[in-house]
Length: 315
Length: 112
Image (cartoon, rainbow over all chains, first blue to last red; front, side, top):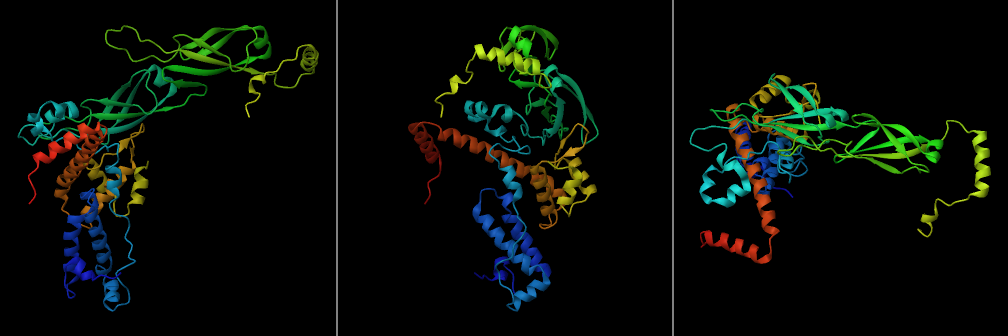
């Protein structure tokens, strides 16, 4: 398909390279896909304009085109309009402005119900006041810090430092919003917020599920058979745990209130904690032991049992 | 996620000094890691590319960039909220949806 590239840019065949550049810029400004999200016609026009300019904007290629050595097709430009892909994400984007409803206030309840205080925020009033922008941070805390809480200091791009107290009980991927700790506002507008995205590095043996902590605790064969009092780690230190007689691998014991603290609700004095779940894991001696083998042989002769009886007929 | 050095290799027509200015102006707002270094997400890189395009290909004056970015951010903000609204309307029972559509059509000037 060949189209007159000069017509695409709206210039004559005799146009100077300056005129061509100017025409391209005019059209590209109007049709840039990032500036016209959702307008597929503009996007199509932009593609045509760009590929026309990729030939006519280059003296050598323009000459080849004029002599009929190359045609209008097959001129690939690097992908344009990439910003739109991220800016128009269904989850929204970190740059999008939430202002601009001040004049909608008289529409009544529905709007403020839906868009909260946005109607009253930036843009309200006649002064060109602008709320400062939000600043984003990634903060990595280790597992124990996430459980017990921590104080952290970060330096912002403009050199200011920010002290963050990470509350106890945060989990990976959660964000903190520090009101007014973002960029300065303009024209007396309020500052933006600091948004801190928390990453929690995993622990060697504690795992978290909600406010509960899970941990596998190894026990020896005699402890499993005879029962025992063992030391088990919790996030607040070791506790004594009674392993019942005849405990199998996978048996789970609950330590009430030894989990992560939940955020306090209003009027609540002490944080309620989740629980810790200890899953027992029987570990045999490091090396094979002939005495133990003999013992087992003797024992098995008289006491056979089938631990897999529950799996029969499963396939 | 990219470091500043990686971003500068990705976007060849951007140099360090200019990038610093753009960050200082708040045109691009990368996140900061615990070592106080800037960390760039995909959207930050795409936004830098867009600003480069606006400055170079489209020859848009520097003092116009904040105005344009503010407009762009408003448009995407509005699109996001409009999408939420449309999804909410979509989730309503048929008669509620019909009432909303009728209401909007009534409020519109007739086309001739």
